[in-house]
Length: 90
Image (cartoon, rainbow, N blue to C red; front, side):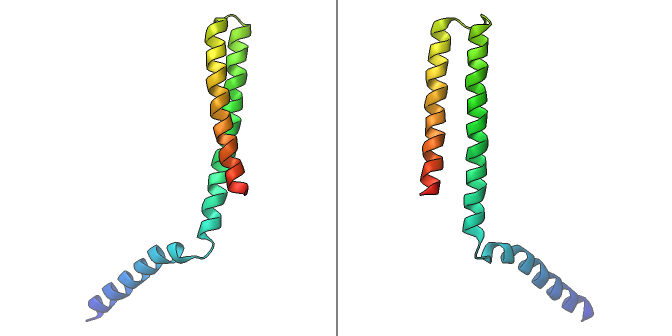
C-alpha cells in the first residue's frame, strides 16, 4: 500500500516538473529573447566572415572574382539576418 502511494506521488511530482515550465505565461517572451540573441550572434558571425573573406583577398588567397562572389553572397545573407531582426522588433 505504501509503495503504491509512493509511486503515485512520484508520478505526480514528475508530471508537475514537466508541465509547469510549459504553462508559464512568459514563455513567448523567452522564445523571442532567445531568437533575438541567436540572430545577433549570427549577425556578428556573418560580419566576421565578410571581414575574413576581405582579408583573404587582400593577402592574395582569393582571386578578385571569387572574393566579389563570396562578398555578394555573404552580404546578402547578412541582409536577411538584419531583416529578421527588424521583423522581431516591430
